[in-house]
Length: 330
Ligand SMILES: [Zn+2]
Image (cartoon, rainbow, N blue to C red; front, side, top):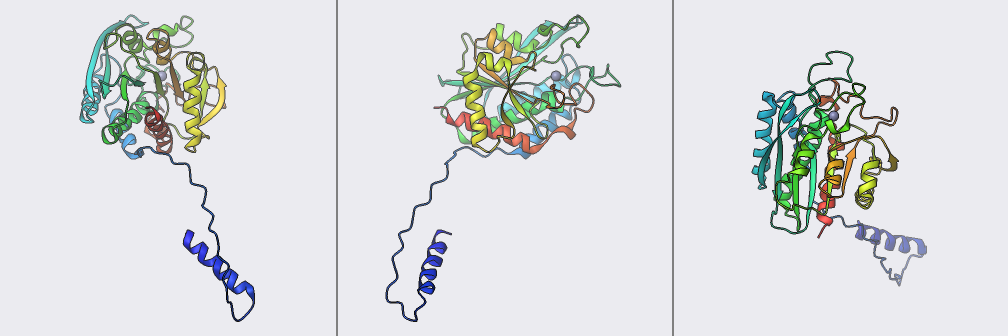
């Protein structure tokens, strides 16, 4: 392209002289083009992330103590192991708001476990055991394609890329259990502590003594089309510098339509709250904000939270921003 332009320019000079004989061609000093911003990052494969979301959803609803939950736990740990991460499933117990004794399974994968500098990526993998935001079949469990599987699917593809491209730092991936077994709104003033049971358990019983990470990033409901990620209040309270960094990368990579500079106060609670407050790791949440309602996605806690909600371009945007963040850290 560069050479062709030069040639055309010389040709233009020749023609432009208007004489039959051209004795001299004025030398053209070629101006160096401004180099494009070099962005080094491995390529995130949205097809692969989409498949990991679908494979979870194919198990059916996945809430503590049910059969599909047990099968999916094995699938997730094996998958992380297949990408070369050091894996374990942390088993714990909790009592839910409606007095169910549940077994918690937090699935943990460590990339480069001996590296001192580490970051923590997390998402919840369980799905809500009822559809309290729906108008029908409200007592039946949901599939949780977006609310559960989307964040996990993106992180699995990130894990696959780590094994191929080997960043300099350590990365821990935790799939928290029992995030979504909390008390439905309006029952007893909704105790937020009834949510996020897996992350609360982990924060009080870390898988490694004195575990720490420089910062943490949570993905929750991060797979729907036209996702609009605002800077939510818990993230801004505990880790504004991480929000600013990640949102800056989002814009740099051309995803300013998703990573918007707008503060919102809508999450209420999520796993990053306990990672911040109990584990003391500054952590942020990448979560979709519904502009029209000021709430979560319209399919939230309904039977419509299925694979139709999942959008590959959103998976890509989030995955690329995460990978870029990882590979910027030295
Ligand atoms: Zn939920």
